[in-house]
Length: 217
Image (cartoon, rainbow, N blue to C red; front, top):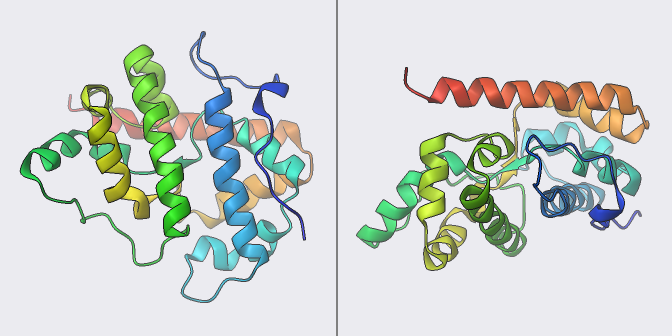
């Protein structure tokens, strides 16, 4: 069984983030860790209650080689989402002293402890990017300027609370688009760099369109 480990992202010079001066290593590490966790879960077997993306692509996930993880992790945006669009509510929720349960999923993709750990680091990285490169943060995490501004305004305490309350929301981006992920995993596994780049560029276009749609005219 392949042991999926996060690649040493700084050794790969093919990153192409949409903003100069943004270190791609943290994003690549987060992408790689999430990909590896799903690949390991599939390799150990998934039941019918697991999300369709894992059930229908179990073989593709289970056979995902480390080189494919490395290629995919170099995506110029986060392949996984923890609900950054809800960032404006995090401060409000904290002020009320209640927990936001509205987006929790019955069919979680990740073990709770692993999801909480990844979510915490993803939020800290997004918070840093929101403060230093807000426009890049919008595209990297597929969210709006108001959400990025709300995230940048969060305290570390609020980020910790958000990680606790939103961990179960962590999921692959476009989790219901099985065919897209089948192509993505296939291109990465087959060392088809041209096709993989096309798919990832298409992903950027999707994120841009979705983000613009969220902004009122």
